[in-house]
Length: 166
Image (cartoon, rainbow, N blue to C red):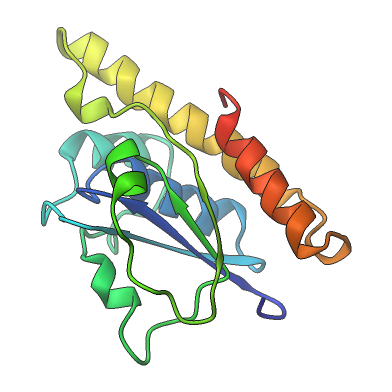
């Protein structure tokens, strides 16, 4: 793993909601220790307006968030990742590119707020719940004693975080 700042990539199929939220959370909360990115295997090309509204409401910067293809991070010259997390079940089942540097990876499945059914209030609850789960998991991740864990122990901890209900 890199020394100093750890690069983290959050993957989801569409890169329009969950992975975008995770990127925003880690970039703000882990500033100076972590640099987060997000991407999708089949990106929608746009960030969901509900995500932009939620992030703005919580005082996150949204001017640089965008939906992008994961190949952007497998190309030569891309930042080398230390960690790669899938946050949707579809992306976890797909064949990911080979990431330079062999980053540690884990699946942190979060229900898709985009597919939530119901009225506008129920949709907002789904986005809020996805944000809460991601925020809790990222908080646990940021507080792991990275330097004192061997690679196997760290991998086990990452997988445990993904199994938590956040």
